[in-house]
Length: 388
Image 1 (cartoon, rainbow, N blue to C red):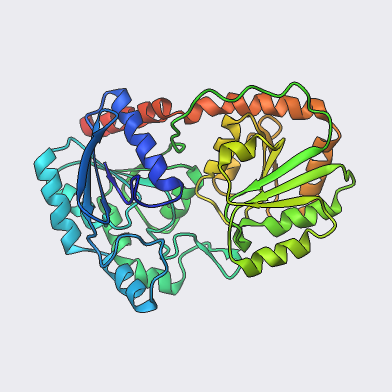
Image 2: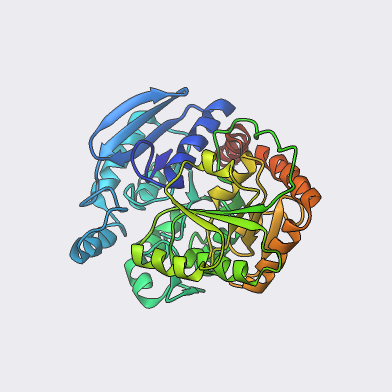
């Protein structure tokens, strides 16, 4: 299992999801060896699997840190086919002799990994966690809109990735929509496909509240950037008929945008909480709002809410639309439609019984994301790939 990032290296949900999937595969009975990159070479064993961290195979490994433009350009060019990564991953395959290679995202470990496996007649599966294979930003979102196909600069910067994608035998992603957009644009042309939700190392969902009367407590949790649509939540709050509500906005971002949001929320009972621990935050709210404007590949924050028994109101777009069960674990609304969002929140504010029912529905969704369940499904598909 070759990952773009693996804890403790990298940030965000990707490395955590990779670790949970690796653990889930081990629980299912697979002999798992994880290979990733980091600041220095390291190796250790955990949860019944082995982890090998290699030093950077590109000009740097942590692509989340801001870099000079010239370094970014070189990094992205090398990511189209990196001979250094090819030989490094070939050595790891020769050492472990795997029955199957599973790549999870492909930054740093490089598409050259697929060729190294193919030349050794090893089946290749790939797990998409972003749009990096066809968009150098990884988001397929530009100039305040979602891209239907890669723009010219993305086509140029990802040419090698597209060509190499033909070496992948099995393609999976955390949402079917992410698979569809890659296939429509000619990526992974011969791969079998299936959708598999992100894995979580879970504990049982939290106990439900006994009393849902009182003000509706609305929360937002995530980075504060325009594509996340927090300004849509501000507009919806201003349009609500029911004023007995409280909002908590948690997360960090550019200070100038945060100042804009504070202006947009003027006259509304809102607390900008900054960076918070998600578990503590979710215990403070009745409903989580995820008003994203961009096509998120998954939406881990929604599942975190489910584990806390908190229903989710989310934009009907990308992976979010495949997580939130409308009327059961929360509600969906058209991206950017503040009026529709306001109507949903008014309905929740006026109906404590509905809030209680959705909380139960949210908790009932949580088990499908548990690492043993996700790992077991992946293990079954990988065995089918090996023996087909």
